[in-house]
Image (cartoon, rainbow, N blue to C red; front, side, top):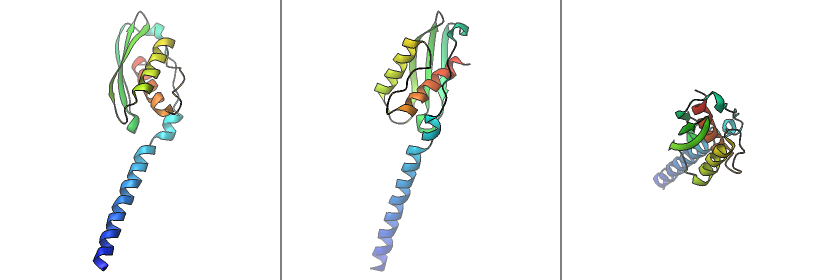
Length: 128
């Protein structure tokens, strides 16, 4: 009986640790990502070319390349993304940036941090 209780409590302890680790992973960087400022870019100062950009924000880490032609954003390619793949959010943000020709676009409702992570990677690419 005593041995069975030790095993049960050990298993429960492992589940508690796994749950706490999962919660930490899911929320780590959430607040700083939501409040992260996104700066506008001046495309008039950017020559034609392909510019790599990275944002490292834990589970919101991603890497993009921005192709500039005639001082306009012609294309944005996602090279690497960490975490849950969100193609709807990714496409919405990329299309908004290309349409507005800047990083000062609205984030996708319910995916603020994911949106800002992509915007910051794009900003980083164009701010080099």
